[in-house]
Length: 76
Image (cartoon, rainbow, N blue to C red; front, side):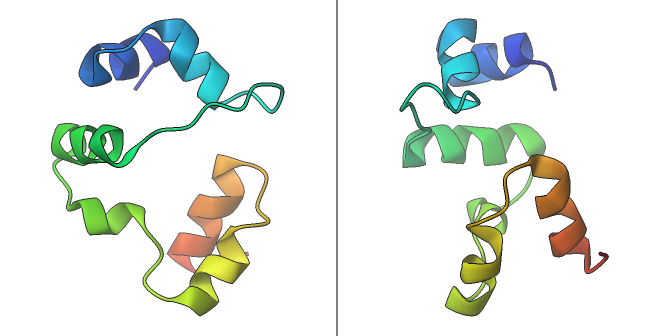
């Protein structure tokens, strides 16, 4: 999924998507955005959230998406 695809899915500008992924700008997805993403991907919105606070504490300090995926898949 490209930034353009994601922007079209959410009904926002490509610049908004870039701002969300930038560490320089304080921009975030809201719950409605997450719901739209989950529908687009054909998954439950709950799949986008950690299943426990313990897992959340491990995810929170991750700085990139690849680290998150490795943690979610149980690999290091």
